[in-house]
Amino acid sequence: MQTVFDIAARRAELTPHKTAFIELESGRRLTYGDLNDRACRFAAWLQGKGIRSGDRVAILCLNSASFFEILFACGKLGAILVPLNWRQPAPELMPVVQDAAPKLLIHDVDHAAIAAELNLPLLSFGDYEQAVAATAPGRFDTAWVPDRIWYMLYTSGTTGKPKAVIQTPGMAYANAINIGQAIDLTSSDTTLNFLPLFHTAGINLHTLPVLMWGGCVRVLKKFEIDPVMTALQDGACTAFFGVPAIYQAISLHRDFANADLSQVRSWGCGGAPLPATLIELFARRGVLVCNGMGMTETGPTVFLMDRAHAQAKIGSVGKPQILSEVRVADDNDRPLPDEHAGELQIRGPGITPGYWNNAPATKAAFTADGWLRTGDVARRDSDGYYYIVDRIKDMFISGGENVYPAEVEIAIYKFPGVLECAVIGVPDEKWGEVGCAFVLPQPAASIDAEALRGFCRQNLAAYKVPKHIRIIEDFPRTAAGKVQKHILRSRFSGT
Image 1: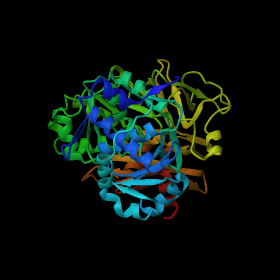
Image 2: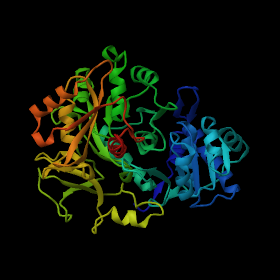
Image 3: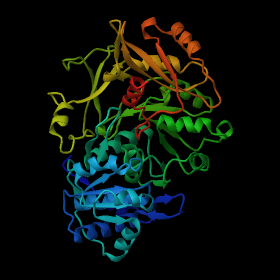
Image 4: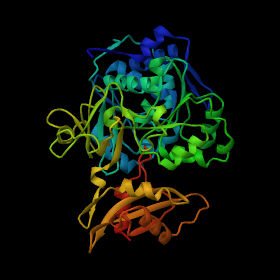
């Protein structure tokens, strides 16, 4: 792609009077014409304050249409938006701020106190509204270079130190095509925006693609189960995306058994594998949830299961979508045949060019011939469907045998009363490493650790059976809902 175009500007030309955003709490509506006008006004305001192309602008807020106005304003100007994690206190945000060095921090009223601790020039949402109202819209080039930096997402994944993943306009377009064709997205679709905007899913699944197609985005400040259940039943959402924790919450809601979910035509899940037990539970309610897989580094969509095989191939993330190419490679980056497990590697226009201000991490992320190393162990079956076996770093060796925690977790999920589980490898004097299973029971359920261990022995080889079982009340999670296994390891070593 030589050029991509300003989505807000083009939509304002094509469908200026169509509703782009509805904020469900406030009832505020924003047309595509409004969206572009406000973005042009704020871009002009930023320009007047000395913000130039390449400068960073940080934002700390719950979900709102204003976030996307600011995102497009930065795109028009060439500035780089840096969404900050509102779940983190100021001491955790400070290294991110120091790395990105933003010239301005925009914040909502909920996070004014934290923003004040970060020692940056501030602009509250209230002052933002005044700036938009008082500034004439600027004129900006609607042709964008596809590989320039549009925004950056800091991700610590499940291991620790955050890195800023560069996001480009070209990645946004590739993702829109990948997810759009996978779910047959149209201008009649509506989606819910509630996943946090410092995470790729909050921006790209499915908000930016829906805006490209000219649909409508309904915004909740953050995830709350009651308004989400209402929206799923009253026609406010036709294309839904959630992480496994969201599907767990829906399944546990008091109305789940009798809810009419028929108006949602597309159900997608990512961030972590959705357990087979949940897929089967939703299927009994007439809902086919399609597992997918992607990363912040891939924009994110790479895989999504097709509805026709969602139940027949439970556990698969589907096939790579139209603008993604993947391979399963050995330790020397050579492609492996079907049914062999190896590292999943990806290339295509949706792949990040790298990490901000971190050349060593960028170099390490790619093979010599340009494929992104995911760090995931995967296999492809004879029908071309892919399965994520586990994270490479999560595998442990017990008595000389490789153990993939995901395989053990699949068995544990079949035990009555288990809501969620995570298995890690921990040191052991005799075997080198053994498994430790952390188990979250279903509400009101009681799980006997010895009974669970006996169940595992009936379904797994002895060396895979967890030696340690911990019953817990909740998991430490990333913004995507992934369990942070490095924190679980520290908890085990501290016991």
